[in-house]
Length: 159
Image (tube, rainbow, N blue to C red; front, side, top):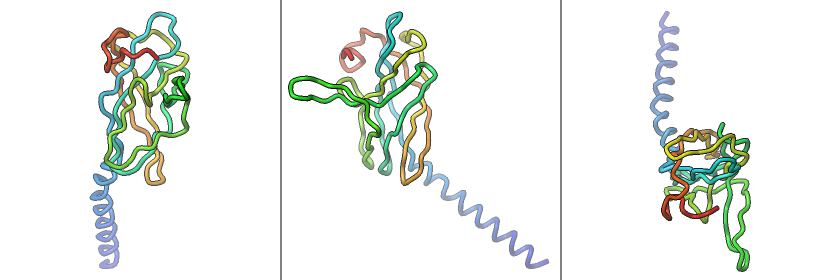
């Protein structure tokens, strides 16, 4: 009888220890701030999504998906001589404790083959896939759709 009680107490202690670690694991996730998408006009097939990512430990953004588009890709824009070029990237490094801005003219998410017009005030659900410490996980966020004619810094940059 004592052996069973000891085993049960040991199992309970083990589960309590794991539960105590759960908040630490949650802190190792990636914070997502100010997610927004540029509004579109009828029949437009692509748009950009922007946000700030903050990893508590080194991580990588591996990809994005959304029901609002057939495809979503992480892109970078950079100068190639005197020409600004945009290209899809496999992963975006997120250094420990640094903000990484996805913004017009830089890294961003490109929604391709949109399934409908995105109007100011709408919300676009996104699932971001990350790798951190050898583990892959997903986080969901809703991106606010901002007016196509928003001033610079709020979607005014043409893609």
